[in-house]
Each structure stands twice: as C-alpha cells, then as structure tokens.
Length: 184
Image 1 (cartoon, one colour):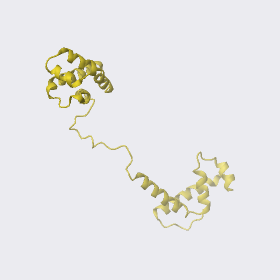
Image 2 (cartoon, rainbow, N blue to C red):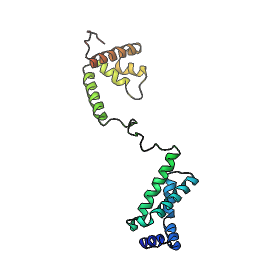
Image 3 (cartoon, helix red, strand yellow):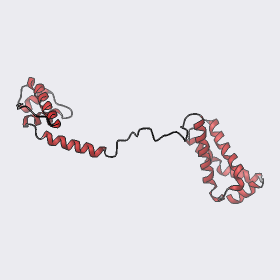
Image 4 (tube, helix red, strand yellow):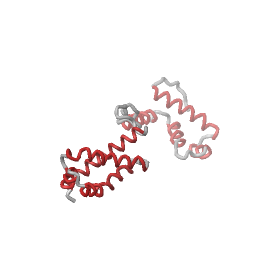
C-alpha cells in the first residue's frame, strides 16, 4: 500500500483510502492496546481515540511514510491516559523519583568486601583454638556438638561456653576494646 497516497486521498474524503488505512494498521493498534492489559472496552476506546486523532491530524502528518510510528505513539499515549484516569498509573506530575530504589547502593559490594577483609584480619588475631572452633561451627550445615568435640578434642559441655568467649573476644577485637588476658 502506498501510505502517503492513501493519507492524501483520505484527507480529501476518499472512504476507500480510509478503509485501507484502517485495515493496514488496525492490528497494530489493537496489539498495543492489549499490551497495556486494558479491558476490552478500554482497548476499543484507545484504538478509536487513536483513529480520531489521525482524522484530526490527517493534513498535518509531516512524514506520511512514518505513519506506523505516529499511530503507535498516539495509541500508547491514549492507553496511558486511560490507565491514569482509572488510577492505575501515577499522574506525570507526581514525583516517582522519590520512591526508594530497591537495588543496593553502587558501592555496596565494595563496602561489604572491605568489611569482610577487616573481619578476617581481626579473626586471624584470635587464638588458634577459637579460630578452629568458629570455623567448624560456621560450616553449612553446622555439625553436631558431638562431632565438633571429637574433631577438636574438647568436651561436648565446653563447646558452647568456649564458643561464647571466642565470639566475645572477636567482638572486642572488632570494636578495638582492650582485652583482658583471658585464655580460651
């Protein structure tokens, strides 16, 4: 179809040219309206309003060969306007940028990496017994205390209290507190 010629003829009142344009682009407009998940009635309104806009602008289409793009853009605007009226979209004047971004900050990975590296440096300052116990207990899945006792040659009843003392010592090292001379 020669779209520029059909537009010119339709603007002069040629019904056959208008019908040809409708046949050519109706499927496109309906697919756009459906993509916005409008109800059947709203989709029909969006398509109809797009055709009305074309009638209103027939003699002002600057690039007739790009009519498909013009119709697509107009149909999208009509769909968005219907969604706004129905309250399913914010008004353009509303500040959408004020909503928090769910993505972590750009420097999040760097900060976590630095924190982990500092923690491991402090972890290396713990006594050997604490390092071994905490490594074993943080395995996934954590082993039973009986397995830990066997692997580290310590009584089952002392695992919990020693673990707590080791964690307290690690916290103090992280905070930079002065440590009491305490043997674990």
